[in-house]
Image (cartoon, rainbow, N blue to C red; front, top):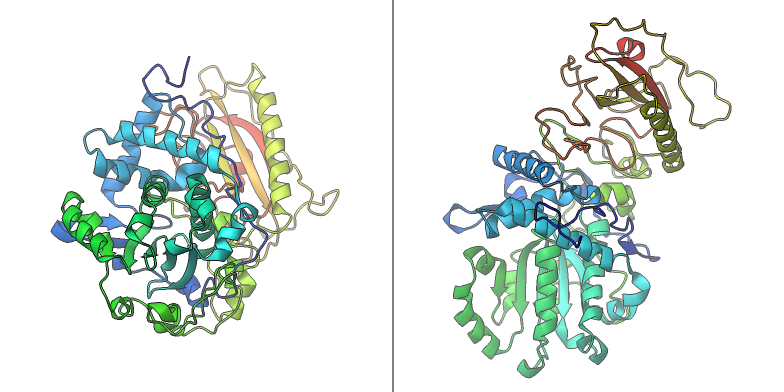
Length: 535
């Protein structure tokens, strides 16, 4: 059958097979990789959207931020397009969806939906091939200082330095090795230097000192730019090129007219005494002395782990290892959909770190250390119970409704073992359906099992993170649809969620990532079951 669907789009049968682990490291980040003040940072409009000439505005922060009507409409149209063409968007790429759409909208304004599907497949396949990238395989190149992170600007954007004079012969002769180095450096930043919803872009300084014109690795540079542009769209805020031979500056003046104005504004060929211009964007403590700062020039092998200096202007005390407040879930982030506003999901260590920094811990709770195992067990239980229901001819499964419910202050029923996933007490039996009554559906309850004290169990101690019992049921406060299968007006492929409110850990907004239990209860369409009715 090849790689094309009958609608002309690439096959999406293996859409979810992107490796879960992109980065493998054994070395902790440096103590000041994430400054304490970044935890409290609320980006301004100028930081979330960058203005260029002729009214062009490009989004810089995509996650945990409200989307405008045009962006929402693009997502809606793309969901419809995917459904019509039987294409499943990879779940692990959901945070990248708007980046893909905007990238292709700018390049292919008249057929960006089709191009976005093609781009998605390319990104998916590239990640299958590239992930995971390991610290071990690139450590030698990291320690040589070919590419490294150091310092942040006033908006917390990290700075990457690329020193082409440090390229070894082995790297020059093996472009794939340089590509994997580039991927490691940027995946490391995604995991440790960026904080979705606060800072999602970087600046890059390319230093051409001691690189003769005939030795400039054009293929290596071209491959690096291509990788960053296609695989990490809208991550580059600005690129500085310093110490370039005069002939390169002359060539740039000749070819810049071939680039878009946005590209021209992002790429800055800096002349002699460029240090003064850099200091307009960076505090001296954030730059090495060779670039006009006060930070001593880094020497091999001290380039890795990446040496982020403390922020000198922070009103918050310099607390080390603030990066521990961010885990894998934090670094993934969430693309907001409609009125669903998922907060940043901080790590299990975050509450204590916020306290040390003198900051108020935000709403929501971290997942407990044993939570991943419990969630996996709950998912298995849910899956097996649903299989039983689906095989029962007496039940016509029309709609699947998920409810993520915090425990009430009432004492929880005794369990056989502390922390065990339990099935909550069954709801009172429903009366049999009359001939003219609606078709039955299924309500699925994931019930948190944790502290009952108000404020400890989530945003309000007892908070709904989902859901409507069915498409036409009354909406309760603090609720929004999580998933419906085959609903009229659905914007996603049949059988996939329209709105991504549920995190990869199985929790929803405000759930607090408590120990979950599962109950699956047959009920009536457009009516809650007895358990729902008393919640």
